Length: 220
Image 1 (cartoon, rainbow, N blue to C red):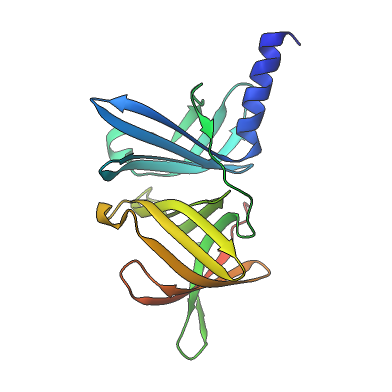
Image 2 (image 1 turned 90 degrees about the vertical axis):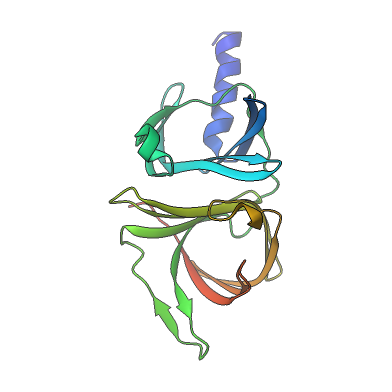
């Protein structure tokens, strides 16, 4: 293997290992941030502005590793009505940088699986249905996304940094598609992990109490 091929191999290998990456572009005088969260099979790219906070677009889905790119089959694309992109040969730009913070207990792909009532009873939903809410946690970063795999409809998303230690889960919101003013909020919850379920309780960004059940997503 020659030197250039070796450098490319190392460069591409890190992007298939599964971490969080970021780069900025200047578009018409605006600084645009691109963030990519990925694990060994799933990738989510989100684009937003920081000052002032403004969500622009997001897309994500399962990918396959190819010789020098990733072939992504999107499950959601918030900009689909404009670009009609449902799959893509994905290549990282040279300026992409790793911004991963640390591996955490809750890292993974989680599907909203139900809620716990005030009496402690659980009301579960079918996670195999096409209407999904996915929370993707990777190396200290999170994004939740609501979408429909059959209609390709996008309902909303939010994301930023997260921590999970000693039963306390904390989200610091960087972007929020439905309301840019939510950016900058920090929300604190209690959590408990039971096998493949994550129990999540506290107050929502609107200040309403919630007690949710999330379950690990396993590709079939």
